[in-house]
Length: 201
Image (cartoon, rainbow, N blue to C red; front, side):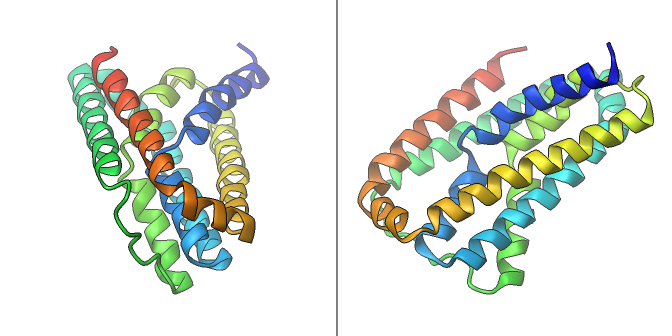
């Protein structure tokens, strides 16, 4: 497969994982809708930086480790899937609960974004399995580096768009009205994704 085709495959695999609602989306949207645009952008940048780090680790090391230890890949998939489903159930049950205060300082917001993505089971599942499958260890270093850069660019475009969209005044008013139903929909999606991830080899 040519480098261009490989990078296109990586991008096509990453985009659905990025835009599917998950903990990062919820954190950014909540910060934007209930807080300020600058705080939401800081959270989004934290998510992007952490995603770039996870992609680099997966591309330049984790893939080889998981290829040598299939049981570790299976355990990672099951644990991440179960955690994702648990997050979905919790979001559903707390759909009508009052919002907690979003991060206020830019540094705090950035750190929350970093922590959210580093501990995000959806991100771990993608970078630990899907990415390493679409970008084998045998690919040249330049292609691997380009793949990481492509993921960072796509992540920045998506997560910053979410921050800007949900921080608009009209969206903030809509979010306040739609929060219970929206949280239930997102919660259900997380549960389904978690179960599929945990049970699909």
